[in-house]
Image 1 (cartoon, rainbow, N blue to C red):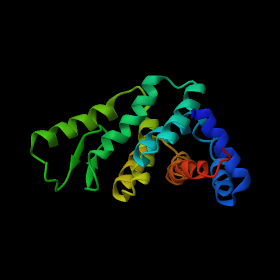
Image 2: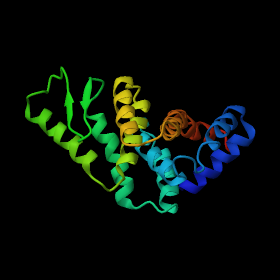
Image 3: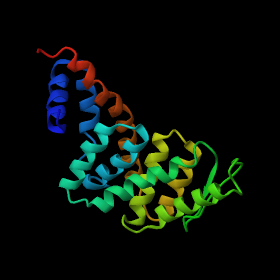
Image 4: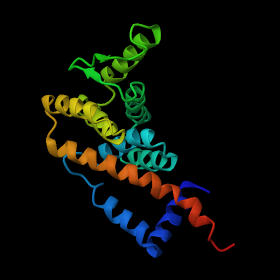
Length: 198
């Protein structure tokens, strides 16, 4: 099946299933331009999709972001924000305005892999392919999707200090919530296919 065929199948499912329709109504209200542009919301969605491990979501939002002008480098930069944060797991992470990372009480602190992890995260966050504000908004949304509240609060505070509005952060958190539910929505497609007429 192609991505477009999947989109059509999910749209058909929405028209006949109350749950799928309810998800569509939740999602639809949040993708237009607001404090974040629609393009930037879809870039955030690509980053969050890496956390939810939803290939359909990643492909869907990457395709829309590309159509709205996002480059391959921007899509990869968004993805690697998630990769950098995934290396820290659930541990307490200190991050400063210069994007220096330090994880407290990690078994790998003081080891080569620990130093490599910190360098990797700093390199990803210091890369200016995406504007600083979008890097912070995306990272806060990723932390929201990870249910990593201490990290989300730290990134939220850094974003506010960088001039990001609380409304823009709220829009990014909405994307994270939608993508978490959207992974389930997308993964109902194989179930629906069991009942398609042959």
